[in-house]
Length: 436
Image (tube, rainbow, N blue to C red; front, side, top):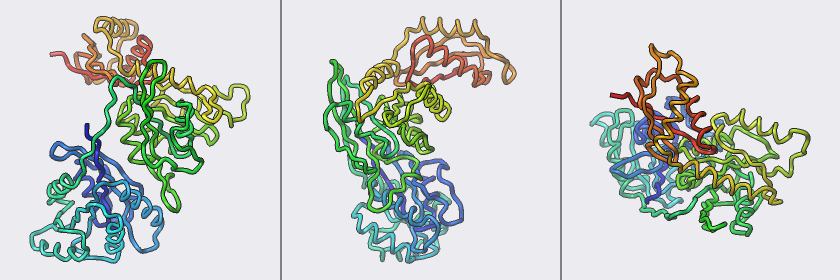
């Protein structure tokens, strides 16, 4: 199985990076505006060309001028360059080579990575000759493009595919693969060590100690596991994790490879907005999830302290209501072994295969106990249910009209399925199909 290559789109402000990003990923993901500096954080998406998938990073514009957030924007762009396998350097044909372009060019020469030089805003044939000017940057043959009109995007993609390295991903058979994710400095590496009961990874209180994802295969009570310790970002100077949507691209790749995601929250610091960003990707990828509250030993205990903290988690992470919560201390190893019990349980739910007859009994009982409400001019009737897939469990319901399904009734059916089959920790997919 190939792992995803990474492509970063780099350039000075207002050259059309986000427009080209949207063209490459095939949808309007980045905010596009004529005002320079609209894109500040790195944005990530997956693109496909000629049957090959790769990640694309959109970055803020790098410039010499001392504008608000410029230091952060430049740091984010430098991180993107470091993470990328191929860099698309976007320049503006109408503006010519600017001092900002020269600054970016120096960064790219220093990075010594493959570069695709995209000369944007070539909106008519008379402007084609403008591309030759950009040979002076010393970054290879320029490609004439118009992000606005979609001209030349295929040429950029062809060049990207040629330059992306082949990567092979290690496969693990009959093994539960789980990743440890969380914002920087919540104790991910310490937790891995506590789980393995040995110093497999370096532990430090410096944010971003883990540079790469580290796979650790091991066996416990006859069950094979692979623990993936995901990377945070360590960069010279100041770290701007507070504005990142995700901690790093390596963490995303680790989540992709996992069946179970152990999402770590710092009990001492409490819940912050970035926690939602960190776990958001795992939710999007429909992975089984366990919430682990680490550093519980540092919290002053009073009556109902744990119950109150759990209530706060449920309020802040309503989209994770199915995920079990475990309170641990990686430092003292308190209740760390409970994580294994949870991993086994949620993995079993994630990979469950239900008999069709039993599934239909549950769905029919649910309808008998609580009929669907009138919605969109009719009432939903479910005639037959079938499990189409696992990891996550995916159920197809054959109905009279899918448009009659109110979201609250689908939530009710999901809760009935969870109650009947103990599906804690795993997302559930319900697909409606009209019976013909």
